[in-house]
Amino acid sequence: MFTFETTFIASAFIRQQSTGFVTDVPAVTACLVEFDSCGYHNALFAQLSIPLPGVLTSAVAKRRADYLSGRYAARQLLMNAGCRDAVAVGPDRAPVWPAGWCGSISHTGKWAIAVLSPQRYRINPGVDIERLQPEVMREIATTFTTPDERALLAKSPLPYETALLITFSAKESLFKALFPQVQHMFGFEAAGLCELNPQQNAFTLQLTRRLAPRLPAGYRVRGRYLLRDSEVITLILAPAAH
Image (cartoon, rainbow, N blue to C red; front, side, top):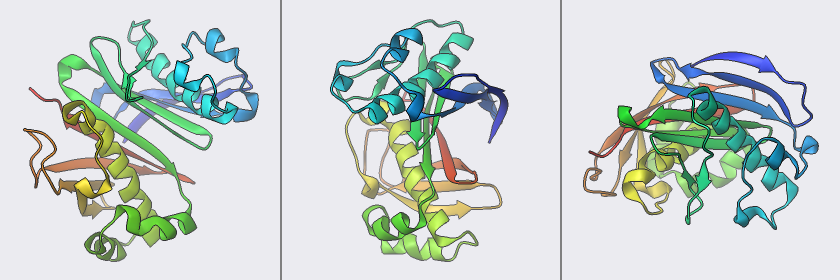
């Protein structure tokens, strides 16, 4: 799904970063970083030239570390593309990308990932990374899947909890990919999983209701997933609205 080159960094906070691109769409770049929350301190925001948003002034250190790791990954991609502007925070707390760019950010545990696309390609990326916690997936399955979806996942050759996690992450990626068109919150029930293809590491989601003029009920979105040792990454590249 990604073509990466990994660099190990002698830093107490950022331990390594893998920078590259989406294999099928090289114009969409990606940066995956491993970070250590124990190495976080507040001065890192200034040292890394990343603004600390007001919404985080009273946040705990772990929350700030998570935010900083994702923004660091995004900044690496923007700087590699010749853009020195930072990703801002909108009133809805969604990332606001510099003019000419669109992207997506996610983090979990000790990992953060960002993807970036030039706006001229009219792609809205949505990326998500999640840790595999089988017992949690079993406990919360009914909050993000329907009985029909769970029946479909039970038939998959993948472990049931892994299939659940892919579905959860896929819906998170869908929200991020479609939000620029929808411009309002929507929940897991707005889309249903209709295909999970382990041979192609792919999935298909179908909207259950109209979200925007060009996103009617029945609209299908295809995405890819990557299984790691303890995480799953999902990616959706949605067409931007005309």
